[in-house]
Amino acid sequence: MLTTDYLIIGSGAFGMGFADQLLTETAADMIIVDRHHAPGGHWNDAYPFVRLHQPAAFYGVGSRPLGSDRVDEVGFNKGYCELPTGAEVCSHYASLMQERFLPSGRVRYFPMCDYLGDGRFRSLHSDEVHEVTVRRKLVDATWIKTEVPSTHRPSFQIADGVQFVTPNMLPQAAPGHADFVIFGSGKTAMDVGVWLLQMGARPDRVRWFKSREAWLVNRDTTQPGAAFFARTAGGQALQLEAAAEATSIDDLFDRLERSGQLLRIDPAVRPTMFRGATISAAEVGMLRTIANVERKGHVKRLERGAIVLDRGTVDCASDALHIDCTASAFGRPPIVPVFSGNRITIQMVRGGQMCLSASLIGHLEAAYADDAEKNELCQPIPMPNAATDWALFRLADLRSGRRWASDKALRRWMAEHRLGGATSGVQGAEAERIGERLRVARPKAEENLARLLEGPATQS
Image (tube, rainbow, N blue to C red; front, side, top):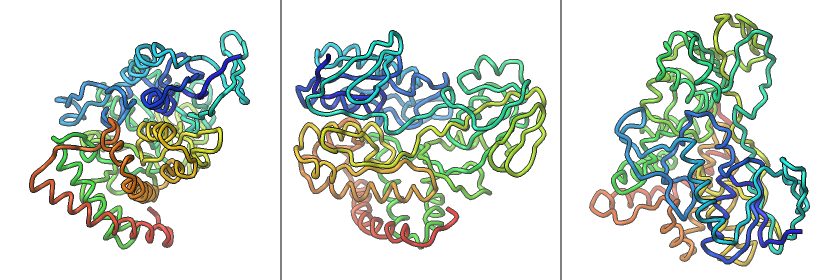
């Protein structure tokens, strides 16, 4: 029988971020259980050329930096803060476990174990079952239900003889092929398209099957630090002004696109999806060279030389390499209160910032006593899917920001936390002008977004 203060299920970004904050602010004992062989969650299953799509400053845990705060000088991320590779993200979490968590004597880690419920977990190696007495709380860090291609089962049929791989297998499978077929509308499909082009694939020999088009966050607007203050804070001002002045949801997206805040790959197709993916204009330019894009719904069946879809059949090269990027990345489970008696369910409480959300929940658990107060300060945000979810994200962030600003101690914690994104020490006339624009637009944006989201549905 094991005993602990907190039993944490999951050692991905949510679980590690929460545990790191408790380790910093409390004397609590923790047990962490995970199905993977190492910390990092779905990053252990990711394809080898994957990179974090947001700057390293916004990812990882609060106690130590991820990456070296470098600005890339070459490639599609040139001029922007580094994007760590999947291997670097895994290394970040593995080092954290080996150098900080375990040496503290307050964290016990059980990898390759399946949580069974009721304080019980089973080793996937030996089948041994452990029982845990939890003195304080069970922490569910698996709510997001991450799904990546290598662990995803396609929803369509695949005939014998079709050459079919996930992105994990692409570096080994791609050599010798001239024709490639990409399935999927999300960031993984975009990564695959960029990688194929970088590796020398001819754009006219790549076919891309999409069921939807996405609005994408322009990476130019997400850079941290004083050097990027004008474009990042200025971008926030442009977003709030667009949200304050828009007359409809469609008008809102038109304003965001004109001001460079959001991008789309095909300027002729109106996006119906927003899932928070961040991309550079250089990547968009590369992907626009892939002209063979099919939009006939979801794939039903792959045959040698043909692909059957919802709205017709399309011929393709019989020896083409088919690449499955249809995993949904993040599930959309129902939101629940974060704090509920002896259970904590870690969820996204800051739009697009998973790691900050986990750290904030850990801080509230450490510093606040009342569940009602804690839940008021961290109201969950559903995972995005439809285009209108950009507006939901912004409205939720505006409401949360207003609640946080009214709590002096929390406002200070957010300003000082590594993942908080605050930029200190920026002064001058331009900073003052941007600050005033933000101050004026913020309440108007909150009011107008609420009105727009209550209005009739649009195709956006």
